Image 1 (cartoon, one colour):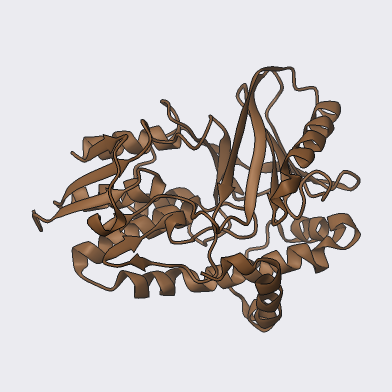
Image 2 (cartoon, helix red, strand yellow):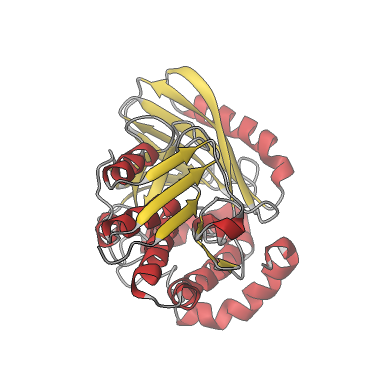
Length: 357
């Protein structure tokens, strides 16, 4: 064993479990304190995308590099219908756009399978228990209240429909965001994701549901509600006192579309490595994530301004044209994004003033 140090982690989400698994594999005694009675209680069997576009490394290879086994079911998403309600593109991606996984507190979900890995490593998870931030080594408690720029509202259901993946960019259905419909092997998920003006959420979902049910023969049964929020900080807080902050507890999220699971895995791994090898986590996290977060700010600005022109028609055109271009790097803070960043930052400060820290 490299160390007998006893590590306490607050939160049993993706980032907390990733940190715990890496620490336990290096000989640390790890305890996780989770206020819910099971992992994944924020979710309801809904589908989420493990993004394959935010990093050059394939997402599944990225998990293996973080010492996480791919012991959960996933579906590569290569065929997507993209529309604004008028114009439509059926796009086939050579490299999966996302790996679709289910989230929730039951077997077969990403959350439950990560818990099984943690238990196999000898990690103790105390459910329905919590500690004060000053009494733990790592904080992984999820979204930060007050730093919520986006929210989702939808349903999960069973369906006899063929597999489907549809995304809609239309401010009536999803204000400054997107609506989506996924059907994978008999399970379905339909939702709207709204940015900034979250009061529009219910009305947007009503229109989203009307659009999808009138456009596709879904044969829905057993519908049940789902929803969630996303937390993003313009200046992530990587430490509170002596505790390291990871995942959304630090404010790490994809500000463009909300595909933040890779940031959760990466920050959990980085925090564990900093403890094991004795380097400055905050400095390493800033070096790892700052360029990506700046790219997100530029992309969000473009989404809400220039790419919104003519009902997102230009956005659809760009995605269609660049879908399989290896040199298209919208998440890596490319030279054009560096030029646009001051203008984007000024806009975001005004529109999302609550994201300053």
